Image 1 (spheres, rainbow, N blue to C red):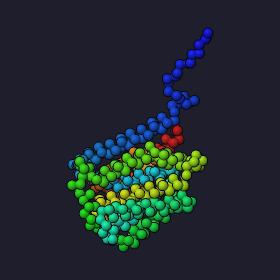
Image 2: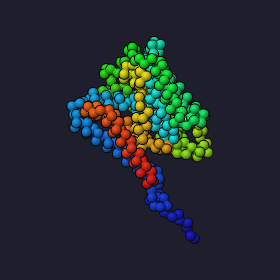
Image 3: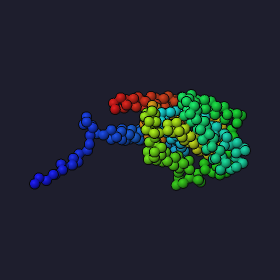
Amino acid sequence: MTQNVSPPRDSTPKVSPAGEPPAWRAVLFRADVRTLSLLGVLAVLIVIGGITTPDQFLDTRNLQLVLTQASVIGVVTVGMTFVIISGGIDLSVGAIVALASVWATTVATQEYGFGGILFTAVIVGLGCGLVNGVLIAYGGMVPFIATLAMLASARGLALQITDGRTQIVTVDGVLDLGERDSYVLGVPPLVLVFAAVTVIGWLVLNRTTFGRRTVAVGGNAEAARLAGIDVRRQRLYLYLLSGLCCGIAAFLLIVLAGSGQNTNGNLYELDAIAAAIIGGTLLTGGRGTIVGSVLGVLIFTTITNIFALNNLQSDVQQIAKGAIIVAAVLVQRRTASTT
């Protein structure tokens, strides 16, 4: 009598028909290389700062300042990363930060204390994000046009509220967050908020259905719709998320500056987009990382700090940022063409 014997299992990893590893491994490899590259760039900048101005750059207070300044634009960049991954863009983030900061620092708002300022900043950010989301998702407007209109409107309203004047914050609870006595183990509270937003953003993007839907919409909106994803609602939620991040960033800026001004958040939209791009987020959507975007923010902030300590003009800083953006886009195109 014969006995059926099953063939031995092949313990070798599965490969594609062409003999290549699975696609997901290639994606992870590229992500790891990109992250290590960004960490390498940041390390080089730290070395340059330490060599050119060792007494100033490596001072604890200066490093705390770099992280604090990165926190405001960093929170904005987290929201921007989600929007870009979905295939959209938000040119209004800087103007929303300005509007939220001045609305939250009016005399009437400050009468409600710490909670009133925080609540107002967040609600204004969410309100602006809601308008953007409705116009884009349900109004059929191109994200570039809708957010450009919001940029102009929010800046104009911020100027109207302040009448061109700086609104000084008088609430002690808000001002105390910017004092060294409020630091936790030497870490400023603003940095802790930034870290919390980063962790939450990473978890939402990588560990939730919302994150997977965001990537799907950015990769192929029609295929996502056929798969049962409500694309319009997802886009609405993403612009609400961007507005929420702007509201949080506005509150952090109020703490940092101790005031509200209509010029707050100037060029934040460009800095956030640039940080996301050099972090590996594709402008065409479908791919991006929160970690890469945060590293992009730290790189730009460190460059600005090094240039300031070396008394270099702001125009040189902008040229350097522009060169970095161009280099990052060229690397993205080269990577995309080889995959």
